[in-house]
Image (cartoon, rainbow, N blue to C red; front, side):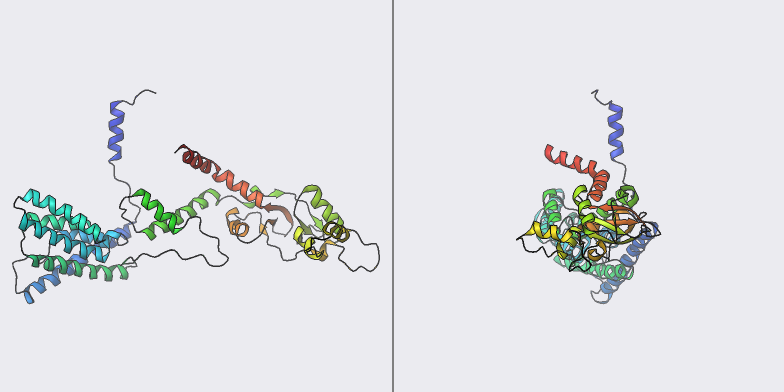
Length: 397
């Protein structure tokens, strides 16, 4: 293959620098902007008042620049692990202590600043309070040659605490969960399908990724599950039962003999037959399980002979066993309309114990039957190419 031209490579590199589009609407943008305004205003007013009333106008600043970056995190991304209360307060305070220490011990401001930032990052990792503005706090104190450890209390600790309190109040009033505590996914209730991936799978993937992500683990898991559901909805949402069902299925009438039904099931190798009336309206379904239940075939001894005797047509007037399909069929049948989305029946097949679902029209007349085989075939046609691509990629690793 010819090598790409220099201009093409340059264009590709420049395209990579283009910022990604934001996925939040204008309302959320204004909410975050107003929150940052309110948070810094409250913090500034209260800390200026405290400086004059309690601290008697110390020479220390009552508001520091790293708080602006903290406000962006607290009000724009309140779900981020980097924006949680301990990250804000602990990250800024500990970084201030590191910067002050470096300012006292290292005369060269370049070395002091670099050392302060590096040690602050290491300490924030160790204390589980990684907070990007903490690096700015460490650089501010070291380059500003702040030598009084009281700076770590005021303004660093006090400013951060007030900002966090303002963030808690504002975010909760505007419908955001803050503090954003980790919430493990609840176990599925009885009857619900199990999740296709677990919390342990997410943790294992994060460990392999081995990089700090600006999203909480539970938010990431929820996002993956919503993405999966959206993908299935996109791939299968418009697929209707009439497109994948077996048309003109075999059926029997209410009064047909058991022998007739059994013969049809054996000849065509099916495990269920819809039961209809003379107007072809669905009235029930007869399955292999119905035959076994009424023939009392729980015991293995004499199985074949018992079954033959059960389905054999009775010639006497009075019989001590069922003889017609309507006598053993299941009357309460799970059905679906021809226009129903196939995706609606996923839980019915996977967890409901159903293997055959008769498809009816608006007059309740039988028009088809949807089996597990039909459902799997439809699923494979929709996503089979992606599954094969994923399998090939896995084998190629």
